[in-house]
Image (cartoon, rainbow, N blue to C red; front, side, top):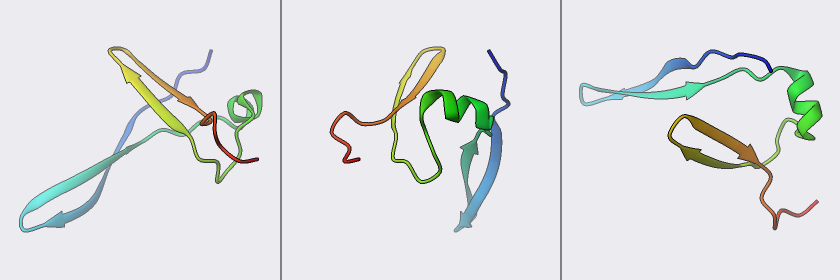
Length: 61
């Protein structure tokens, strides 16, 4: 198991309100093990204490 840190990045500011996006850097070895590559479309499933990424079942290969 590897640990990653959640990064907060300001994406824009509009009418005095700041909007943020959150990022994590995934180790290449983890992507390889999961069978993911740059540009893949992933589903995200969140529950308390957990976030899961997976390829959609109906995704074309």
